[in-house]
Image 1 (cartoon, rainbow, N blue to C red):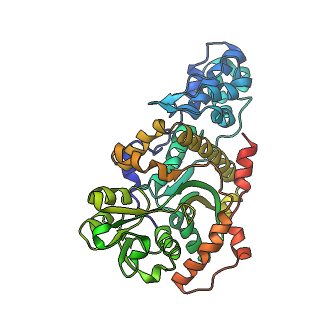
Image 2: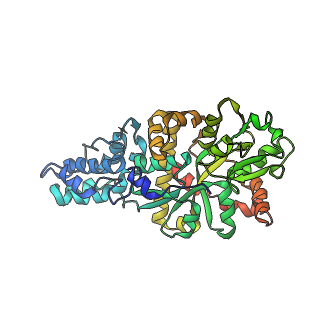
Image 3: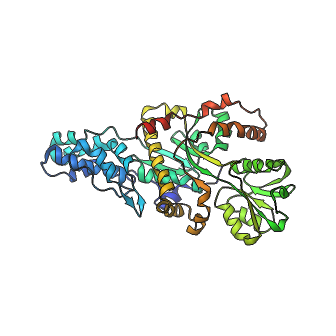
Length: 418
């Protein structure tokens, strides 16, 4: 499992919703304050629309909501979200979810200014607020950042993104969602068959960075040499997959344990002949040894698939499920921004990880965000299960046994609501 920073560090940076109102505008007071005194349902509806717009676009710098009445505020609030610090805002997603705060906003508006009739009209397009979501991930990796942007810029409820992953999800009942690579899903689902993969957050193309002075000019030259990575992870699986392309396996090399921080030093001081891990550690290693570096990458062999997970029990709870569907819809919108307007999110990634912007630019091409549950996920699980089972000395599960781990129903519901 990838190393993680503590949640309080992320909170301190102001990058996740860490308080009661960190992700949204208070619905009651804002609705009342924005309504004209005695204006009745139409003007009050506009005020409530502004509040609901704030719910969905506080992080996105949303403009005030509908001025034409509560009945239309959902769509108007959706159109209103623009940007924060150049980050493209909510676009249509707020329109899908702005109604979540509508009822509360309407009630608050009625109490503040316009009377019961106006409050009713203001909340007419809404529904019960989304229940809060608690999400854990590897907050030291690029791969977690779409979760962060989705929670801050696109999700209309309250969502916190903290340090952890699916182990935290499975051992802390307060956690609703967790993200990790497919390798960890295979490991944890043996003892926790209730684990479910529901969406793909990020895909990362790995590479092996080696030292020419260690006698490496082609991939097969790694036979008998040391490669540093983190054992039992997707990166270690990548070593095996790559070595098989030249008729070898991970048994033909010595795997040295390291971390994202230590791998570049291990390569630079000659302790190992090569390193591999998720970005940006390989790039840091490459920069350290300069022209002595040689890299090996075959994107057709393997890519890390970081998925969003929940449990069967959590998905069976109606209010949690409704919130998770809304969050996945928000994540789809966030990933579109990563693909189409990367310059607007790169500063967020740099700040979240505390890395140099130039370093992020060098590795950005090795990441992709497709906004879906990758269609070959079960194929990948079936192939990788053989390696994972061998690592732990058990019998590999069949495809039929692995099938229940993948649940595409949340994605289908999210797409149906767009």
